[in-house]
Length: 69
Image (tube, rainbow, N blue to C red; front, side, top):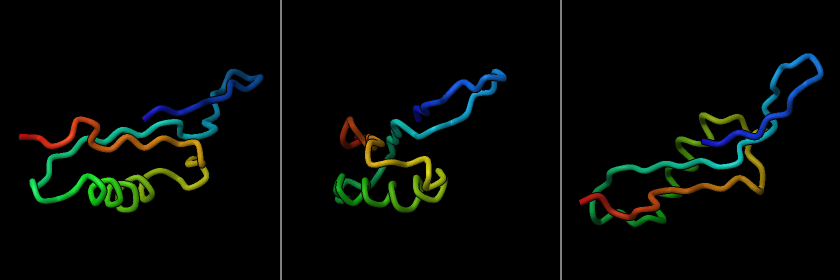
């Protein structure tokens, strides 16, 4: 996960948004990448990352290498 931060005047770092999320997972051969992508986004990412941190520019990279054999 890549998070974009803003440095405050007092030196604190404030998270602004999640820029990128990468998940690679093992799966059964008959499960499509689309199903895996949808499931990971809805059942993992959106339940773990606060909604205000996800924007229309957030990039989801799910199983970029395809199947694990």
